[in-house]
Image (cartoon, rainbow, N blue to C red; front, side):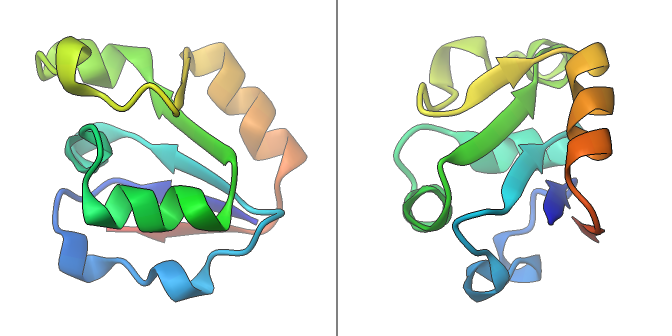
Length: 93
């Protein structure tokens, strides 16, 4: 399953629904939740190693220096590949 996180509201997420084979994509305002070493991000990363974030959304919000290095920074072409490889998808907004 692909979990896309597009909200900056941590209360909108339920990390208990994430399993080891799932992928997580932080995008839009969700990139704010990918700041280094927060409890929520640590919880998500402890559940799956497949965590991604969109480069253009990081840059648009000026977060380059504070994004957790455990996430893989990807571009839109790689997002398309993620959506092709993970099904179904759920959007946390």
